[in-house]
Amino acid sequence: MPPTEKNVTVNRAALGHRITYALRHPDRVPRHVARAARDMWLRHRHPDHIAYYRAVMRSDTRTDPDAAVGSRSRERWLALGAMQFDYLLGHGLRPEHRMLEIGCGNLRGGWRFIRHLEPGHYYGVDISPDILAAAQDTIVEMGLQRRLPALTPVRDLTLRFLPDAHFDVVHAHSVFSHSPLHVIEECLANVGRVLTPDGWFDFTFDRTEGEEHHVLREDFYYRTDTLVALAAKHGLQARFMDDWEKLPHGQSKIRVTRPAEPQPPQPS
Image (tube, rainbow, N blue to C red; front, side):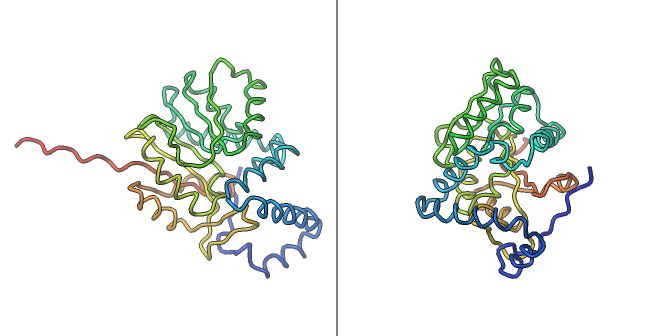
């Protein structure tokens, strides 16, 4: 499949863009208005972003768990999961690795990771108990009970209940695209602690080369430099994954690692 063409200059929150989009897609206006009204009510009830987005996920999951994680159809759900899995497999994921998936959802990619990894080596967390119930359904559907995956609801991204230097791979697909900067920083401030020295953290994000913005406080658009600098602030090295851009996916990807430990001087 050809790569997805990304429009990284448009500001989707700008009034002009919204009017133009509505004129081009009038059939989508009623759905957008209904979603905006729902989100306004949920933000009123839940001022904290994570509590707000947990409520969004509860609402979306009750309608369709696949759509709640951003897949328009079951076929797209399977295709996006395969894309995530194939990419990590081609970038070093091995069965003996221990993997933490942040925002694991209903295991769109996770069920493939669970099947590939050794039993007990997959740990999924999500802010939504409702989507984790759907994840349990996926485990049953795919016959993965004996792989013993762990699924845990979380209130934040501090990861404080997880052990030091435990995970070889941390993965967050389509999580930071729904997160304000302070939530992303909370994750980056803590993820280095749970990574092994040679481990890595891959995350996707909605990229813009213009003004950073959000739509309905559901979708957030960031410049690459912003996230790279935020990782550096917390002692992590980050690089933009150019080869991900060749894939048919609308988001971009960054890989974060711990800096190499200095080697002791060799005796002369």
